[in-house]
Image 1 (tube, rainbow, N blue to C red):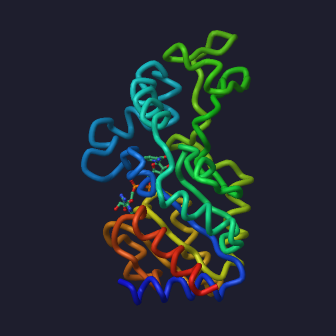
Image 2: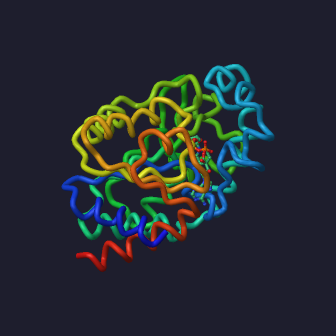
Length: 246
Ligand code: NAD
């Protein structure tokens, strides 16, 4: 493992533009379960009944059962050493942008300054009817939270069936097509179009470093260095080696 971490650190130090693509796995050690592992949300809530925009439009009260559970967990979570490690890499000038599929705000709380929230953020909510937007704190006292117009509010996170906000989508793909290294952390790479980012980076000649508890679809194909284990242990270990090389 030590040799692999050294190899990954050298890739980061040599490249001019480094990116990270993160998924639910990076926040598991902060107490937020991922979706697909055992005990994850999709084991208890069926995606088609609770996770789609059409489910929200037809039965917002029902979908709020899942959203309220997710919100309570996210509100209690604190950044872990993996979030802090990526924040440190940004501070050192070795990580241009973090593209995250997570909606938990933990990268920012862990010290990161440039984050693209590919799937939105649960800190704000909007009315699908009149487009008013609210800070979570303004409306969190009632579940489901309601707009002044009487409609049930939706957190500004992307449900299945919704389009990815264009700005983040374009910016992510543009950065990926000119990066020299991509750190892929805690994602099963099953959700499109976020899972196309590693291929875009690879075509640009980037070194792909993957950190995950288990191999993914990327591991045997696009990944150059696979660091198998917990992000909360491996990211700080990688940052320490990078600091030693500088
Ligand atoms: P996923 O649930 O499909 O996969 C998580 C991956 O992380 C798995 O490959 C797993 O092996 C790995 N993993 C779990 N614990 C880990 C650890 N400690 N260290 C390293 N790797 C670990 O997640 P995904 O690919 O991000 O896709 C799920 C979708 O659900 C995303 O769109 C995301 O927006 C959303 N989601 C977000 C959160 C959050 O904001 N924290 C939580 C759950 C789901």
